[in-house]
Amino acid sequence: MTAKILVSREEVITIISEHWAPLSKAQQELLADNVRIVTFTKNDIIYRGGESPHEVMCLVSGKVKVYKDGVNGRSQIIRAIKAVEFFGYRAFFAGEEYKTSAMAIDTCVVAFIPIKLVVKFIHENTAVSSFFIRHLARLLGSSDERTVNLTQKHIRGRLAETLLFLKDSYGVEEDGYTLNIYLSREDIASMSNMTTSNAIRTLSSFAAENMVAIDGRKIRIMQDEELRKVSKLG
Image (tube, rainbow, N blue to C red; front, side):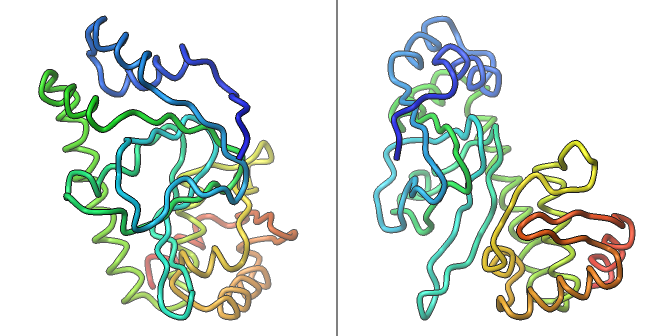
């Protein structure tokens, strides 16, 4: 872990305030006095399963994966977090310890806000409470949909869905094709609920059909519509 901060405290407060708007001036000052800003490098652990939640986290920049350790030491990626997104608070509201862990995919900046302060804002400001209700509702909806897709779709459909999810979440580079995130084959397999060998074979078949192009960890989506058809057909 590194202590280097890539964004200013003022920028972080502005980002958070925009999502929880309107915050009063006093609330913004409290936020500024209590927020903790940390820079993580690739593969740094942000929180671990089994720990007690004490802070709400906001990914200011970079990319984070939320995962759960499974049987035989195999981990399952639950979701990928992008900037600017809040995470790590569900366990507190459920009265539980963390059931998942979070790891930096690349260099990222995370703002940590004390849970007690967030609860205070929720009691004082309906905009903040509405924000968390909406966010949790959306997460539940996407989680339900993903569960069905990962259990009912065939391998090709699952992998196509994962690639499109990464494209829709993180976008593409300046060439208009290359996914703006570089994941290992293991991570792609985990997100697609398949073995690494199956992910490699299926990705190779997509490349042979010219739907994607592969250059190491760089993946270019060459035929978006065709890939979406594969995902839809399952």
